[in-house]
Amino acid sequence: MSSLLIQSSTHDYEVAIGSGIRGRVEEILDKDYQKVLIITDSQVADLYLQQVIEGFSPKGQVGTAVVPAGEASKSMEQYQYLLDVCVEERLDRKSLIIALGGGMIGDLAGFAASTYLRGIDFVQMPTTILAHDSSVGGKVAINHPQGKNLIGSFYNPVHVIYDMETLSSLSPAEVRSGYGEVVKHGLLSDPKWLDELLQQDLTQLSKDQIAKDLAKGIRVKANLVEQDEREAGVRKYLNLGHTLAHSIEAELGYGDITHGEAVAIGIWFALKLSKKKFQTDLPVKDYVNWIIRNHFPVDKLNKLDCNSLINRMKRDKKTVHEVINYVLLTDTGFPCIEPLQDEELLQELNDFLKEVRRHD
Ligand SMILES: NC(=O)c1ccc[n+]([C@@H]2O[C@H](COP(=O)([O-])OP(=O)(O)OC[C@H]3O[C@@H](n4cnc5c(N)ncnc54)[C@H](O)[C@@H]3O)[C@@H](O)[C@H]2O)c1
Ligand SMILES: O=C(O)C(=O)C[C@@H](O)[C@H](O)[C@H](O)COP(=O)(O)O
Ligand SMILES: [Zn+2]
Image 1 (cartoon, rainbow, N blue to C red):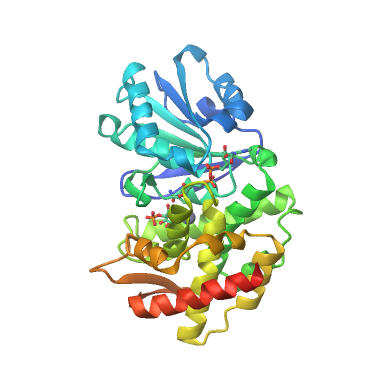
Image 2 (spheres, protein in one colour):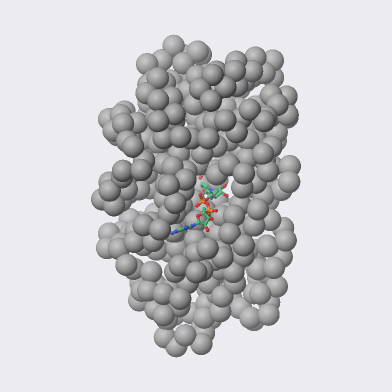
């Protein structure tokens, strides 16, 4: 088992990464909890819930709450359900919530943990590749019909326990989705690593390769969130591709496209804008080849209207005084924030949608 320590304003926490560690939560945590509530989704419950429960002794102190799998559960309705369970189970300030699942569960259960009794301890147990990103850094949230993650807080877990074995049951679509955020971390940090990533066939990744990529991605994220926990500055770079991605997700209806797939398409647009603004050397051609070769669902954009997307983009959390602030790159590893006027964005997005359709 390897571990990485993340510093935050409230406490430092460890990211434990290992194979087969899902049954060792009680042993890994350095604190005793009288009551534990494991929150998971219906798909992950069938696969891994029992094994996590088995690791506790006595098991009587462990309750469970299962929400339907899928992005649609990051909702007010499921948040209310989880608070009802916390109250019914009489969780107190010495109790623990465990978020067992992908980013949807991490965000939803983390938000419940951050607000119940004004905050009780929670552990992130990521089970997707994408959740290497969501389990670190303390952003927890639910969606609003008008926009992604509009209701949330910054609230760090007390521990992250990442069992690499669970990744073996992911579908090809979820592997692809996870690599949307991995490649984002590559673009934000290291041309050599990015080059390797863009050559990958995502259906042929070995366990070792995935483990290496995730560890690198977590380090990139940790470095930025440790400098800027509350997103006043450099943390905004982690939003590369997200202004468009979140709008696509909300326009299509939550769950129609995965978050990582939408991010990968959003990054394509950000790269094109960056190239035009800064005449950079960014590997846009290799990036587009990677998207197409790995079957990211670019055809989904056919359904979308440019003006509706821009209206959604204006609800982005980085928008100030109605001006959209975009994460661009002057080169690989050199992100920046650029304000973009609506007319410019409309023109560029229209051109982009036409180009994407040519690849469909
Ligand atoms: N808080 C953050 O910093 C942050 C960062 C990135 C993404 N996010 C959020 O994360 C969410 C996306 O996360 P995600 O892609 O993990 O989606 P997800 O949690 O919905 O999981 C995707 C699907 O995979 C299934 N699944 C999970 N683990 C599995 C496993 N081991 N084997 C088989 N199936 C498994 C789930 O049941 C689900 O159907 C979005 O809501 C996004 O906004 C948050
Ligand atoms: O941790 C961050 O900061 C990120 O931006 C990581 C993103 O990958 C993630 O999708 C995050 O949830 C987006 O946050 P939001 O504030 O734009 O909703
Ligand atoms: Zn993201």
